[in-house]
Length: 558
Image 1 (spheres, rainbow, N blue to C red):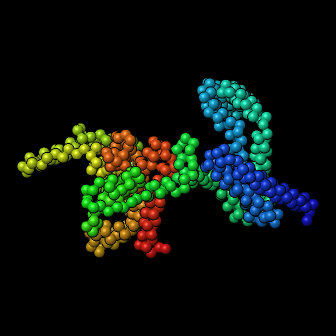
Image 2 (cartoon, rainbow, N blue to C red):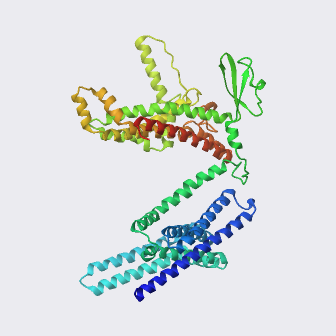
Image 3 (cartoon, rainbow, N blue to C red):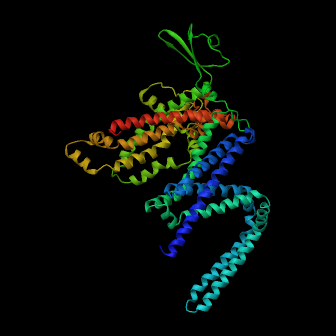
């Protein structure tokens, strides 16, 4: 081994030794942080923040501790863990330092003063234009260079004036004053250290020392590019999801109260009682503990009257309305969409125009759509009732009948309010499902239709025996998506039915999402609302799982 190679090897050994020591320090610091956090009284910080810090410190400590021995043995797994730990520590240190220095608040303050510097940006643009004038004097090198230098100088001068005008000097001095405390220095040192180790661990010679293959380095680069999306998923989706699960076991009210109540919220949701009636009109107060239970329904069973009481009656009403909405909305949106897609798949003139027209309701804002339908549903001046009246009058004049105009109160009648929401929602979803069906139809080989036509199959036979079977994967996707959308219906009901609080006449259009909105954001019972949300999640999960199992059995895939 040459002297240069020996020197490189010594440098690698020193770096590996330093990396192991650094990982050990991270593990120790994480353990100390866990002890300090656990020793603090629970009321010192929010429960969710305490759990988040515990998870972060535990993850960093365990990861750093495991990597120490692996790094000593130059195992590639140790290098990967060290890269992960340092990357997470870099992000944590950066965010903590920015928060402590008031950078996020300073950005808001900078936004308020930004307008004062806008006029000076015109000077920067003028400097840029002066610099570009140098391109016109390529034959005269000295003049071209002079114009470029003047342009740069003008841009720098006006940029400095712009920064001074928006208050960057005051912001810099404010940041410097924050470093009079030890914590910013500690965070800054951690930030610099993590950057150093990240850069060194990514070097080719260090990767070779850990016996990393080219595929390993490519995988690390891939995860590095994916990390913003993965971290965004963890912090903005998975994190809030787990937080809502924790909140569902508390009595959180958004005003500081967050006591652990265990399964009490779920027990209240599902708490039902059944009692036997002596006669069908017997008052509920005689057979139910009305301090706890409200009458949900009563019916006859094998000659006996049965009454069911619920502790949370409104939840079961919302569940019933949601399921009824789903059962009605699915066929009214999917079957017409399938027929419409078949028509749009034809070669009739103007089909591209009609595809765009039918898709417009999907991209239109729900509020605007609901307001238009609210006007159409108006019992006095709405076009729907006006059209019904004209049809009835025409039939009466033609046949001599005496049919009476029903004068439907679409949005105030408990029997039809939910149907009104179903009609509007099915109309709005029709275009989207049509486009999905159309895409599936266009992927079916044309040869199959030609072969069926040669065999004498008519249009209906070709649709039933060629289109529908080969459209099964698309149909499965559309049905699954439609079920999920229907079970989560909210905006249509909230905007279309003008009642306060929302829920329609006699809660006839109360859905689960609308109910949890009321509980969480109107009555501030966020713990209970989170429990309702998780019940809805489980309902959607179970229905979707059943659909997947049925699809697997029908296709023979396991």
